[in-house]
Length: 201
Image 1 (cartoon, rainbow, N blue to C red):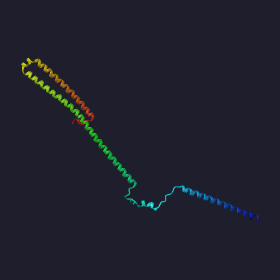
Image 2 (tube, helix red, strand yellow; image 1 turned 30 degrees about the vertical axis):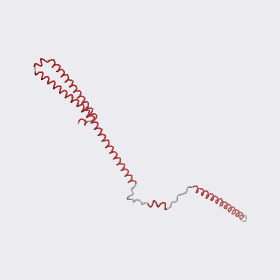
Image 3 (tube, rainbow, N blue to C red; image 1 turned 60 degrees about the vertical axis):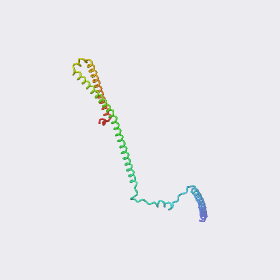
Image 4 (cartoon, rainbow, N blue to C red; image 1 turned 45 degrees about the horizontal axis):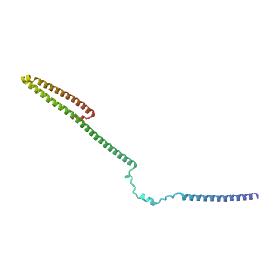
């Protein structure tokens, strides 16, 4: 028993020494940690501290009531309807402009073809008038020639020459009228194909 007492005392002393040593080591390590933390805090940027003054400006603004404040969906719907109405207005304006351009183009086309057709009709009318006058002169010369038997005996060669001239002129005019009428028909077909129907009004 006496042998165990010094051994117990030695163990107790060793325990106390070890404990004291551990405490000194832990104190040093805690001090090191504190120093490191302070150095890190000094390097870190300053943090914003929020106070009541910061919220005064936002809280002073009147909050919109739920009835008057538009919701996100309502705002999107309003934007969509505005976009649709503006698109419809744009389409309507474009359609109106295209229609006006189309009407203007049709009027221009009709005017051009009407001028061509009227010019051809005027040419045919002039040839027809000339043919009618020549035919009338020829018939008058025949009447005056056959009315007097003495004229037939005296001026037979002169009358034959005149008759040949009249007949040749009438034949030429008749051929010209026929050619111009064919040309008029071709122009009318071209005008129809071009879509200038009002050129015939």
